[in-house]
Image 1 (cartoon, rainbow, N blue to C red):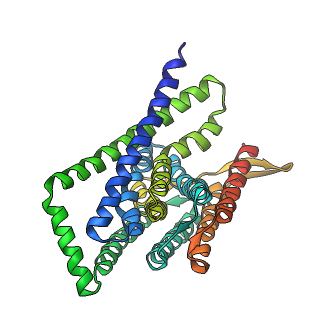
Image 2 (cartoon, rainbow, N blue to C red; image 1 turned 45 degrees about the horizontal axis):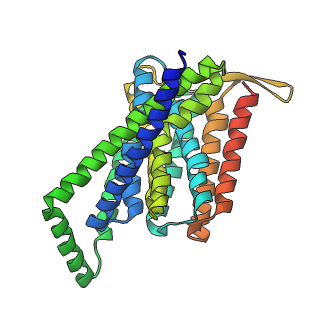
Length: 340
């Protein structure tokens, strides 16, 4: 009987997060139409900032509580889950076309941030100075997105005039503006609350059925904090706005590094300690295997490259691209499982 309530709360969390994603994406699409800003920019800024909040709260709380290794593990794990699972599923459901110019600038920053994080990680710790450098990239990211948004509105006079008129009309319609702002806020809150209900109660259910703690942390928690991105991606695809979903994933990946890791590195007195553990693989034992440096970040980089290549060549994603990303993710999770 004691497991019934967690199961009910788990289902409730799923319902809340799905509804929240629906409200959230509707509001984001409205923003894109009213402002004339490309949906991938909206996805990479406003949407990704909101959907990254669960990871941000989990990581900062872990850092303050004296568990910095959980903070960086959550950030990198979310990047891998976002790219190898969520974006992969999105591609396999429906081919997604992406505006190459807006995409490539963000993709380059995503790769650069990850490579920089790898370089900072070589000593097994992310200190306050390194955190401040990553925070500087966050400032640059915000400025660049602002410039791109402004540039996207610099079009021919006739179209610009029409857009301004429509934008003014939309802004003058206070009822519609208020409605979409409320939808955005409520959607964000629903996603965060729903994700927390899912994660917390999934852990209780897993423990009840004697699932190992390590498996729980590598699957349920990692996926749970990425559920907002999953819901946003699927909802945006169902509404024929795939650019929002892709932009959200790219933006969330960047923010996981330059906002979450940087903040945790700055607020942590002794810096963020990276994961190191003893593993056994095909009969060979590896002592103090630096998982973050040798496995997690390299896998994240491989997934990122697999996301960038299709756009540079074809300008869109296909089901094969999704299957390739998913296979890397499955291999990664499989490796973690067999080396526990």
